[in-house]
Length: 143
Image 1 (cartoon, rainbow, N blue to C red):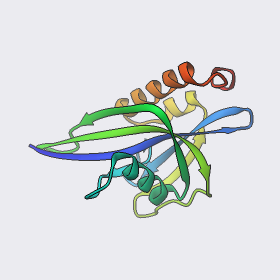
Image 2 (spheres, one colour):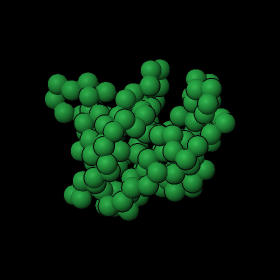
Image 3 (cartoon, rainbow, N blue to C red):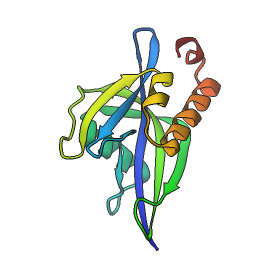
Image 4 (cartoon, rainbow, N blue to C red):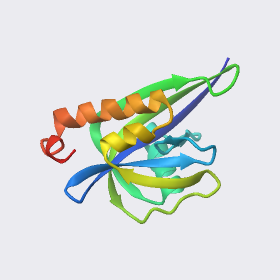
């Protein structure tokens, strides 16, 4: 069994008196969070930051205490582990990496949950929301 590892981020920003999450639509058509393969010598955080910058063109800052993993089999004899961190949008304009990403959207939690293609990713969103409810006093007011 071959193992692969990717890292990514659940990214949010405060916009129009609410919090919005960034979703991307991969060229294969599914909606998810930005993520990508770990390169030699990179930490998980470095991978997540690099992948967000490459796929979306934005800079992010990570929130402490949120690290969630999921795993799935993208093809026969392959198990992929994906590590997600929670991050805030810091700066930059969305500039999509056309080789991998065809679209992006900032949306509220309910819309994000409806758009996300795979249950694994939807579960990551729910864990991020639960974390925010417990660690960010303004989150529940602005959902």
